[in-house]
Length: 139
Image (tube, rainbow, N blue to C red):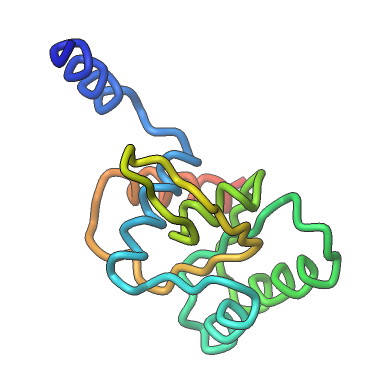
C-alpha cells in the first residue's frame, strides 16, 4: 500500500501545476515567511504602503463595497489581483483553520481578501503563478 501512495505523489509532482494549486502553495510559503496579510484592514494597509506583491479576492464575497475597495486599491497601486472561487478555500490556504490529526482542515474561517507581501523562497509554484500573471497582463 505504501508503494501505491509513493507512485501517486510522484505522479502529482510530475503533473503540471494549475494556477489555483500554485496559488495554494505560494500562500502557504508566504505564511511561513510572515509575508501574508489577511482581512480587509491588513490588506488595505499593505496596499496603501505599496508593499503588496499579489492580492487574492474571493469571488463569493457578498459585500460590493468590500470588493470595490480592494479592486480599486489594486488598480491604483498596480498590484496583481487573482480571484479565488470560494472564501473558505482562501481562508484554509491562508492558515485560518485548525489541522486535525489526519492532516485535514477543521474549523475553517472564511477569508475574503489576502495580500502577499513576501513570497519567501523561490520555487516552482511561484514561477507558475508569476508566468500566469505575466500572460494575463499581456492579454
